[in-house]
Structures are given as C-alpha cells and as structure tokens.
Image (cartoon, rainbow, N blue to C red; front, top):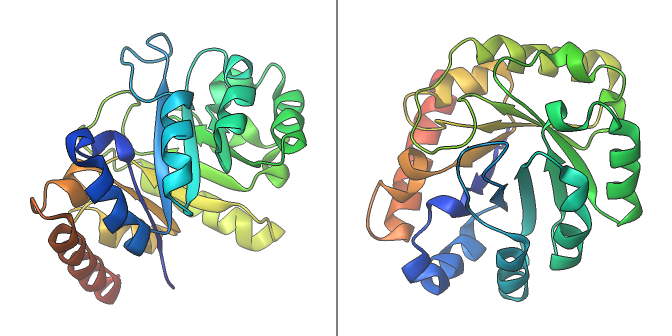
Length: 226
C-alpha cells in the first residue's frame, strides 16, 4: 500500500519557509498544522493566521490538529483560513461531539478526531462512523521530539480491524515519532498517514529535497521488511 506523508509544519524552518514549502508542494501528500492554545498543552505554536498566510501558496490538503481546550472557539476561524481537515482531540469534544462534527461539516470541511495515548478507541465508538480521519498520538501531545509509546501499536491495529470489519471510511493517521525506528511497526499495524517532523524528515539533511529522499529510502526499507 502507498502511505500518505504529512510533514508537520511546526518542525520546518520558518526562516526558510518559502523554499521549504516549494519542496513540500512537489513531494508531500498533505501538510500538518498544529494549533496549540497554551492551555490544553503547555505550548503555543501555529495559528489560524498562519493557515491564512500559507493557503495561497499551496494546493496541498491542510490538516489542522487542534490542541485546544475549547475547539468551538477555533473551528470557524480555522475553516475560513483555508483548512481542509479540522481535527479536535476527542477528550475536548465528547460533551457535544455530534454538534462539533456537524459544525465542521456545515463549513464544508472534513472531520478528524485525535486520540491521546491513554484514550481508548471505545471513547469515540458512538461517532466513529462519521469520521474522515482518526489521528493516533504515539507520544503525549504538546512537544516535538518525545519517545515513541509502543503500546499504541495495538490501538492502530484495532482501528485497522474496525475499519475493515465495518467498512468505515476514516484514514488512520499517526502523530509522534514517525521515523526510521518506527516505520516498520507502524506500517505493520495499519498506519495510512504518517506525520513526519524533526526526526522523520527535517533533521535528516539541511537540504529538504535531500532529507526527503533519505526519508523515502527509510520508508521503502521498512515497507519491504513489514
């Protein structure tokens, strides 16, 4: 199977954003944008304004991961800025998940949900059939460069089996430590979209085209071994 590759823009060089975006436009399948509010996680990264700024410069799918306590405060600004997928954390929407899903759909966007490492698949069982994408966090959210949590491989396989059994349409996306050390296990478990950040892409070479080639070689080897 072919895997979708989604570079995490919080890991790119903002000094070289135009040059790096030109490379990603040629090579990536989608772009991952983290929105953090400093409350849900103790960090602040990108914003709806960032989405608005890059939208005219890319035709790629913009996948927005909302690490925020109150997603409904952000959904409309993110949609207007040009996002394609809007993906809150399940823990932040379960009081009103159906209303949130309907709001995202009413704005013409695809609906994703993000699961923290300690959050089981059963947490979203009543609306899983409505989702276009499920993101499995394989690290605790909020910071780049954290160690991979191997217990998440079971969760990925569980989502793969559910998708096959029930003919669900969601993509299975992985966020956290997608790199040469984890590709084989992730692919074997059922991952479909790999979010690549510092260890998976941007730190492999100062030249982003060369870094991309190195990443693809690592993925090919992992696919052959999986």
